[in-house]
Amino acid sequence: MSHDSGSSAGAGVESLSLDLLAHALAGVGDPRDRKSCRLASRAFARAEAASRRAARVLRREALPRALRAFPALSSLDLSACAGLDDASLAAALPVPGPGAGAADPPPGQLLLTVRRVLLARASGVGWRGLEALVAACPRLEAVDLSHCVAAGDREMAALAAAAGLRELVMDKCLGVTDVGLAKVAVGCPGLQRLSVKWCREISDIGIELLAKKCPQLRSVDISYLKVTNESLRSLSTLEKLEDIAMVSCLFIDDDGLQMLSMCNSLQAIGSTCKNLVEIGLSKCNGVTDDGIVSLVAHCCDLRTIDVTCCHLLTNDALAAIAENCRKIECLRLESCPFISEKGLEQIATLCSHLKEIDLTDCRINDAALQHLASCSELLILKLGLCSSISDGGLVYISSNCGKLVELDLYRCSAITDDGLAAVASGCKKIRMLNLCYCTQITDAGLKHVSALEELTNLELRCLVRITGIGITSIAIGCASLIELDLKRCYSVDDASLWALSRYSQNLRQLTISYCQVTGLGLCHLLGSLRCLQDVKMVHLSWVSIEGFEMALRAACGRLKKLKLLGGLRSVLSTELLQMLQACGCRVRWVDKPLVYKG
Image (cartoon, rainbow, N blue to C red; front, side, top):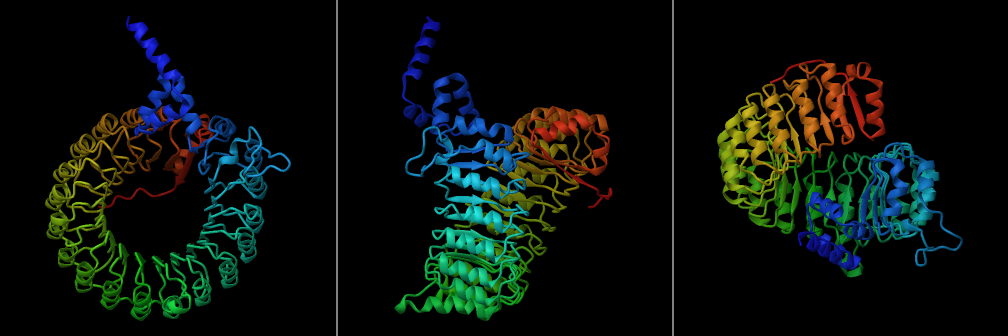
């Protein structure tokens, strides 16, 4: 009878439509549970294949099969596809027939639904591959070519054929010049988001043409370009501009900011930049209080202001921001040495919507945190290198900032276990916590941290007082942990690895360089953690060559990134290195002397 019931249930699932099954699968959040559904029923497997919208391909051999298996794909990630080049990309893509278009795709042309393609760091893909991609994907709207350092004007010409392109990221495409940018601007007039960060051959001329040809632009990143205030003059004509980033644009100063703000004040005759909600001025050394005052006086709807490393700013700039930008949500003030608790008091008093503030390397104290504690909506707080912060400041924050999800205490050397106790009791939603170089933290402090059940990222670098006892507490209490940094935690040993192996099954990224672990512990760890993809293990002095060999073989099919001492390159077996490469694992070999710190 039991067998008949099982057969009836199976038949019932098989009789349901793919739409109903896909709707049921949509309610299954855990990927492991979805996999169980697929394995339990072919109907579920077909439903997911038919409804799947995104895929990340790790090997070029699997690309044609993935495109056939998932006909409804709208997002395709090839950024980690090992060995991908023009030939393999073109061979995997369908070839549109004569007259084929986006509205009437030929039968079997599965890739025609793809709208977003990620090719970051796919250095083997050039203009031929991009031409094939654009031809096969007439609905293409977004392309990411960041860190394709060999990409140049010819690649941009290939992309320019994608007339429907809305988003383009080409950070560090070092060969792109004004000519390539012009081709994109002319061919893709509907472009809304563009990042040309580190494309150092682009000048004011290219930005001027971009602004003329792409009036729909909402977001532009021109960071690290050698552009001047003239580029801001050009961009200020974009009526829909919401977000502009210009990190380390050394030739932009207060005059450029005034161009943006003055354009915004001419509302009566069709003002421009009126939609500006985000501006990034990081490392723009020429920006002063006067520039910020002029900007915020007219751009009152700003939600994000990044003035990282604008060393000339003082509390006057904060006062202007607080007075004019009451809706500010994100304020990045890293390395602004002249701001103090006085300026932050005004921010905390007038900006009740503040969700993120970065005070890294600012000369602030517990009094500043007492003011910021009134910002009950705060989600992200970065206090790295603020050596005057103590447990008392954390008590203030934990008393009223219960929504906090990220806390950075990098090198806050005055923080002790008591401060962590306050954080764990008042900020239970924290997911990311940086305690690197907080050298007074002990196992007792980690016991408090283990109460943060939602913690996913934990950095404990150079906490020389913690041992396997503290790591075991973290492993047991923080079951959602994804990333863990234990570099230079010299008392971390095999006991820590055994605890992680048993309790931290979601761990994807782990740093254990300089830890006192053995080959046995390492082998057990890498063999047990099925989600682990990225491991940094430099100067593991107690692990033999055989230990490395066995451990890497135990995880060979899963690892995607490795960081190893360069000396191992010549002693590990050629077979193992070839296996790692074939599985798409990128190995970074480093030559660092064995130096103990802390």
